[in-house]
Image (cartoon, rainbow over the protein chains, first blue to last red):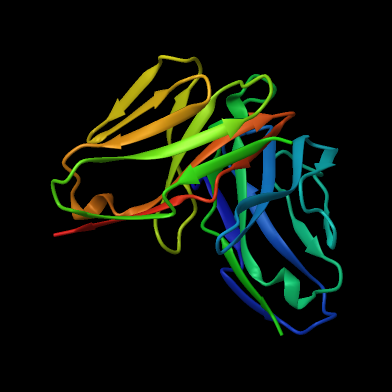
Length: 116
Length: 108
């Protein structure tokens, strides 16, 4: 069981470039989410998905797109990178939704993104 | 607006010196309060779920408690390996709202 995997671990982009952060889980979890973590601001939800084909916005969705074509994969796309998107990005998954179970999330190791 | 606030922001303890971390929340229809541990350079790791006021959970030197407005993470006789950032979170509307964390350093 690999859990939640993320690639790449590190990435440097120039302003205006686009890229996709990959996230995969092998636990058959329905709920998946993307967070960004910035110093002093904690984890902020970008987008989440409650199952294949269903996604929704979180607290800070602007500049990011997601899709969920399979249960296992939940990629995050940066459309046109900006320095304000410099952050650490975490993908997470959980086994249940709607009953508070989404709190017991399993996190990936993170992607450190720098936009110059 | 749902809010989760943690204090203190940072805490330095001597090995064996017990203390508590605080998490206060204003989330309507609270359906659980969660504690996570995050080591530098890693993703958060789930520790506890508390569902109702008065509930307590323990794991090694950690004990989490919950009241109607706040939660405490008590650390008894901590060791240097307990050094980490501790995060609390509350779910609402299919989302988790995280506090900004308490960075705990335990000195040998």
